[in-house]
Length: 184
Image (cartoon, rainbow, N blue to C red):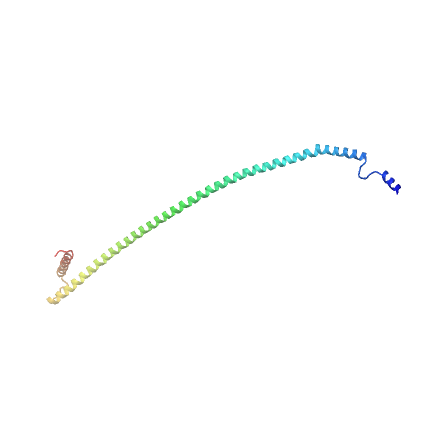
């Protein structure tokens, strides 16, 4: 058993590397570190700086767009308020104009009704005059017939008799209109 331990002591420890591995590993690490420091790190820094600038530019652009949106919103609000006021003014004008149109239509209707009433009065007067004339002729004819029966002769052909009857009827009308107006 002693021999087995001796053999194991002559073999190198697998946990401790050999001195040349330590030198080569350190040299490789230093070379890789220098290459990383010279080539990779500047590229990484440049890309990081570009991203930071892009992000800051995006933030600035977002602020500008927000300010623009706020101005646009304010302008829209002002336009909406102006349009609302204008619509109210238009409604008010339309109501007043509607009232004027109604008043004009009423005045026109009143004028038309007055014209119709005036025509009706004129027509009534014309028909009254025609009726009075017709009644006068009929009364005159009846008076002539009555006078012919009383006298016993025909008076219908006599023009003077007709003029006398007409004068008599006119005197009756004058006497009748004088009593209507309040004079005896």
